Amino acid sequence: MIEFCGVSFIRDGKTILKDINLKIKSGENWLVLGPNGSGKSTLFSMLMAYRISTTGRIMCFGREFGKDNWSQVKDKIGIISSTMEKFNPTFFNMTVKEILISGIKKTIGIYDEVTKEEEETVEEYIKEYNLSKLKSEYFKNLSSGERKKVLIVRSLIQKPEVLILDEPCASLDICERENILDTLRKAKTDLIYITHDVEETIPKITNVLLLKDGKIFKCGKKSEVLNSENLKNLYGIDLNLTKKNNYYSIEVNARR
Image (spheres, rainbow, N blue to C red):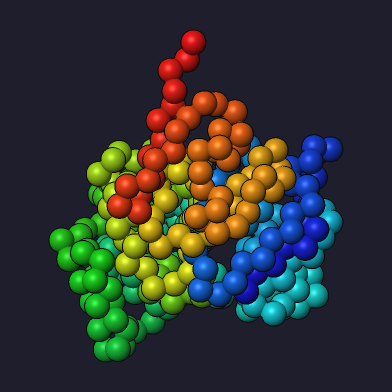
């Protein structure tokens, strides 16, 4: 589905990513974990052509970036970032239901008649993702967590083949974070979840990529990669990673 072949990225003389080789297959759900500044967001922003690699090849859905029509690739990818709602001011004066309709139509705003089928689809998603109490609310009146949930559902309603989430729980309280994670547990698409917080790992994650200093530190099946030793070396601190009921938590050992 997605392949990075020897990808590097240099900005202002500084190497942000170095020789990334990664293959993501259909049906896999990935956790991308690493310290701030490790290159997590930069790597996957290339799939949306927000940044262009300095060297290497990027393949996605059988197409190669720079050689094939990439707009057809982007149509198959959903993307959610921690600050996405700030870049779509049109949403602020739309209701939640209207925003979901705009997702079906793949427009920012609604410019033509809504069909009965579209109306029914939106109502199904509203019910499935517990948005009934919010559907008539204006986006500008929602909390940060509610806004992010609405934007995630808006992306899911387009039925992307993969949904990339870049720090979707940043700055959220515990309740809002769990609401977002519950939404993703229900999602019927492949996920690439970018974060620095291992406690956001949901059970459906199958594979883990650890990035450090712009390079792949570890990569593979969740059961093989996600352990205390790897995270100690990734973050450079003494910690214990525990797992209970398929969820993870970290305890940082006391400083001396």
